Length: 382
Image (cartoon, rainbow, N blue to C red; front, side, top):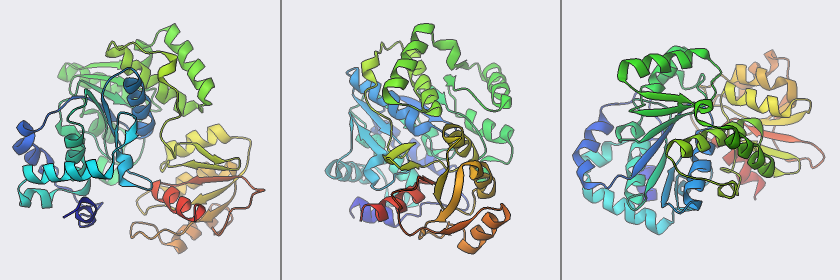
């Protein structure tokens, strides 16, 4: 069965997850896999852009490099990036065939969508020297946590996926930081509790955990400023750039300004046109970052949300920059009922209507999740 059809038979999300399944199945096939050096990225926000900054820099430094990110916006190929471009359909199919040969049918069929595609990416990355691997929703129990890593990067940790990670920053941070195996670098954190937990873990498990400022020197900070100005980076992308450069410094890989020639992943504060900004942010921390960047201006916000997101708080944060909300239709059983979302918007004393079309004279922010950006792009590009 071809990969596209095979993945269609796997649910994307589960109410409950068998956390023992991925380690158990990986143990059976690990000796048949060639695992390059892995840089693991965990956290709540900024994993994708941090990873792409780092992957691009390694590639332009002459390394064979793979970047595994998720989810995708329009095409699955976006998840598997090798030496400067998304994987081809043919290479995907070849990797799928190899993985099917390694797994017994019972194991292959039992793997979740993300677990299977994580192993699929490892097959595709077999000739790489480094893999930049982004965790999914978790930390120590994530499918990406089964592999041996040379370094872990920790982006800002905040509230998200509470049903799986816990309802407090302490629980969320502990689950994520427990994925660290040996060495880690922490981006600036909103909550001091994250630093406290990291310090305790470093003592308990003899881990080397650094902050970005422990590694970057003044010359590095100057380069960050030059690159940020050159690429017109907003503040949170600038922080992601700093974390990626700290990783290069830790790995003793020389870099130059020319190693950062492009903007990071599409959909991360992307200006689609003069009056449209796209951002796949989908939690309160992402909303706060957006408001900080757009403060003083007003936007029509094209929005929708999954049921398990704290959309009331997200909309409250976005309110100072919102002219009104335009709810975009999304076909997904995980999306909140439109009537419930409307009531929430009304209770926040905000106005709303259904998204129909773009008015060229108005400014828009498309925000809410990968699904929101995907739905918008499909309508916008028709």
